[in-house]
Length: 342
Image (tube, rainbow, N blue to C red; front, top):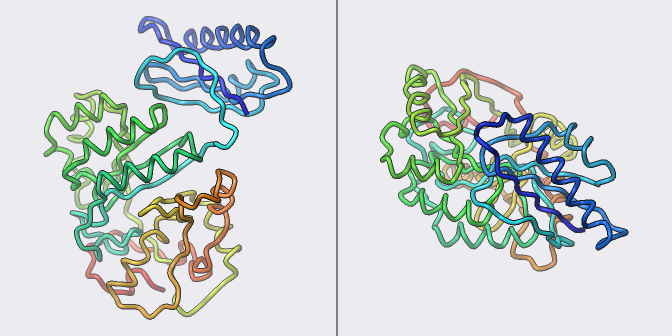
């Protein structure tokens, strides 16, 4: 498959509609120009604006009739010339989570990532870089890459990790997922790096610190950082150690609500719960004959198609997952097994 990467700079005085129409017109001209050069093929078209902006996908398709597939990139950090890219073995992933740390500064009962049970654990810059470079061999684009925890702002080398992620995935949406508590304590150089690299901040607020939300917004606006805020008071437990269901049924129910594959230590998992299951098992010394299998991204026999197929296929342990079977209001964890297990 061939790809055309079309880069357009946006005049600050022009509105998004005018900019979009201008981009589409230039794209049509470029495709016409290439018609005599390439035939009997189809293209994945990427429009990457220099400044923030996004396009209605239905309008994009309307203007690119005959093209099979499209990818809309919201951010691009530097100017590139139009170019054609050969990607016969590569494709895109719509979402991926990577945990920068496992532990957290907020002790949430029933945390889905088992953070209250984790010892301090930081991903190394070397592992982070190597894993992303290896993943890039098959997955060239990630629509949304979320850097998780635990609490990511606990990582002492956060700025370095952000620079690595942006260099490897220059046009993709990257976000830090945080509870926001440490946000107000960040040095200016950290916030400036986040802005410069077009990294978003996604804040999940809980009742105990919800009154700080206005301060978070004020700070992020001051540095012109894109943000999202989710107010949460409900947690769920869904693990049943004694009861099973068909794993295909389990992942089908899960995928109707969530798509949250995770990469950890070079292994891909269908969700962060599976990626961090070892934390639960180790803390409570649970007797188990099996941990999640995962998919080794360093396995030379895999390709993008196998990766995508794996992420939509159940792990045997999915049979013990009864998604959102029981809910409860936010509270501080006492590190009891029944906070996670039905």
